[in-house]
Length: 324
Image (cartoon, rainbow, N blue to C red; front, side):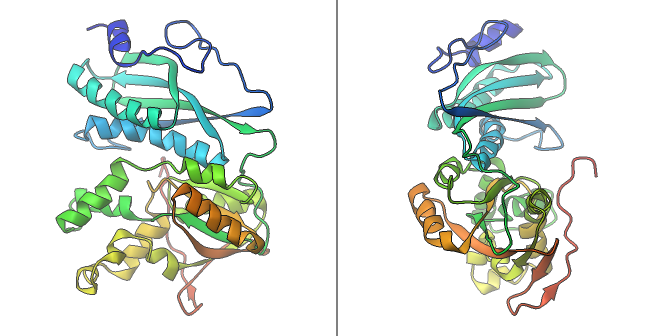
């Protein structure tokens, strides 16, 4: 099968909202009046972001999910995406599985594939996603203010828990491993929550490299600091729901590392004034996404960690860095 055959077989569909999709030198989109385009790109590289033996359907899901997560953090509604795919060889069953996972998530969010590129080389997936947000309503990193509450969506640390188990560093009960692996390989982009937080959150971003590392970007862009309750964050990992006897094998320091700097969570971290707590709760309900208040924005720059008693905790947690 040649390049254009595999594009036609696995990655071509009739356009819906685009003016022109796959098959020409450029795709054409007509922006909705009163909207701004939100655009983001993410790359996944075999051996760096995923294992060689990963289920191709799960990989197709994740490749698009990590991009949709960026739109969620901006409060943007997905429109379309492009796919650049480097393949070591043409493997039709693998491509069918990858496309199936990608299309299922794309259809769930009304997001159509409008172009891209394919070539032969090491397995590498790069997606650029496009969304739209009403002019002036995008959620940014730069809006956090002293006194704002700090929230995260859903759970933290499960993906890192799965990674440690798959690398053979820890042993997990089969049901816990399955749950954690789902979070690693099939993250849920919080698009509905991002849309519900427009006009409510003062800042937001998605968590890909670890809570503390990603939160530091909000703090830097906003010119503020923060205090984080590590007891609250430690309770957001899947293992916290297990009996004490099952949790005992995990050192509290390991749990903090997973939740504070584990990476691959693809949840939303956001801030909002205390006066918006009811609105945040409503956004959580309407989007079907749990949120937890984990800290407070401070006027003094820097990131402070405290325990359940409010005592300082050393910040020695390094988030993921592609070049470290």
